[in-house]
Length: 167
Image (cartoon, rainbow, N blue to C red):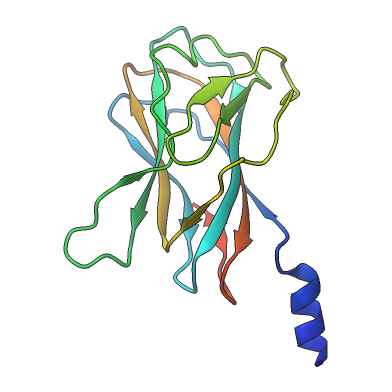
């Protein structure tokens, strides 16, 4: 077995983490905020995705939904939901260090943890999903709000060279 094959066997199947810092002013009603790119080298398994509030979110009925816009589709590609839309006002008044969790991959609800600074009970998604190359984004709805959220994503490459990068 070659050295590169040995390394691949050691590291394959392990989650990699990507961080995308939040930007003030991106929580605007109707906005699509691009967060990550699944690079065209291959598919990835989505293991976890969550946010951490870095600037307090004002009291507003903001909703958030994670989506992916595939780049491989023929014709006009359609957005595919990664999570259900959060309930109106889920993020209302969220303090700094509040975790924003996606419960269980495709169709999972977005929830807010009551314990600040610690994602209590946070685990990798019970139902992982394979994502094809494309752009992972969030759709903001309900109302405009101030504040910022840092986003974190764990993934496992399915193909050689597959990776996710922040935007």
